[in-house]
Image 1 (cartoon, rainbow, N blue to C red):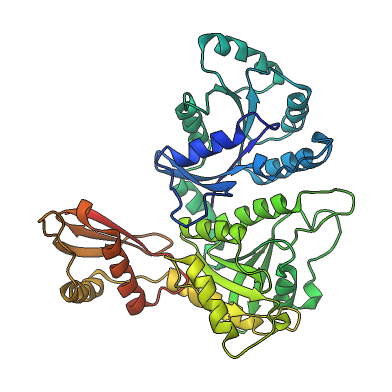
Image 2 (tube, rainbow, N blue to C red; image 1 turned 90 degrees about the vertical axis):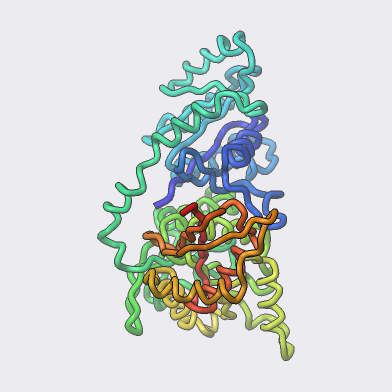
Length: 439
């Protein structure tokens, strides 16, 4: 179970600056994917060992003449619907505007926690000015300066206090936990609906315009060919005739929610468009959350084929995914039902890989061999001795290696160990985490 925190507010109150500060500073997990940081409106943040997904809604508002009427109103509704905590940002220098009041009217209707974040409070005087925002009708207010970072610690403490403990959530989730949850995510119009419908059989057609169907992520219990799983479908995102919703933002929020709550992510790409920034963001979050990943290249029937087309295409995708390129890639056509069931088989195999347990004795037998073949390089004349390794409990493969000088183990050596373990134990499609600790 994940937690989504959304930053909302009118333009130019500093939403992106706050997003960058919460993501970038406080030991937030910074992405090491090339190019990911440029256009990123969502990511994983961490505070006091608790993690949450943060989304900056400002990054999705397109300039519209009547700002509130269309884009923003829809976005706030979506954000309220999908997020667990809402940060409502206002600007102390400007005071309460009509737009702020309009936001407040929408936000007061939600049962979810709303924290008013008053930005640009960098003097005692401005703190005094901030009291007027209590008139918006929310109980909790935080004065910050997202530029200098003052006040963000208290804000983060409050966010964390609203996030349930993992252990509590785990015990509540147990009923459905035995069945793998597979989420189908991807940009609008890449063929998620066709894929889901092809899997479920036409009689279970989900793409309908009845009010309500588009709103909820649909869980379909799937049992076929001896395989049983829950399909978490984000394909219910349909442009409704009356509401001109920001479809991209909606699909992102929906995908985040599904991704947080599943075991395996099937990322659907359009063969003609390939893997773009938005897709890479989803891949990064899947990795951060320790989810299994399968990539489905849809509409393959429309591509001009040459002898090595598929192989070259696969290599291009894997190049973009590095360093995590041990991911199954399947070429399908949902319309022609090509290799659809192969996708399910591979997803189930990835699920097996993710839940694999390796006994400590077997693991150490293997580790000894690979360390002997290539010992850790010495750093500053110091020799690293790895004593033993063990797998940590949890939902995705995590290993801890005990050694005398954990701080000197290089990233390239970590990758060596990870690659060898992948070869030996088949962790295809699954992020593997390796920690080094002092014995």
